Length: 164
Image (cartoon, rainbow, N blue to C red; front, side, top):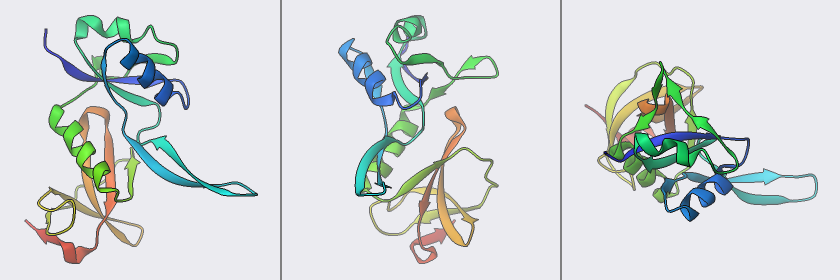
């Protein structure tokens, strides 16, 4: 059986605990995290949160999916059209590369119209190819993760993009 990255849906804000419990069972897990500045009435604090709310990526076989659901906080595997959602290794590496740069990134699940094909000319994401779209009055470099119907949006100035 071939190992694939499956998308496990967790209870609200339980992504870290579920990922930890799955690792303790010897499973390969990827939980993309971003840092966010939260403000309370008396203080501000940087907190780590899951990039994709409620999602943990588990590398396993289809036959062993049930085992992953046995950890507290795991709800179900994400399905689209009756098929388990899977994410290609290349897409996992892309997410990792974007997050390693420390560049602010946001996940977006809305339907984003296709934009111009572009390549990034400089900086930590140099040579990445993707799309450029306008949202509000800003240009965003879009990285699509089709396996989970999500997009990563990175705000990059037009001068660093070359239209392909």
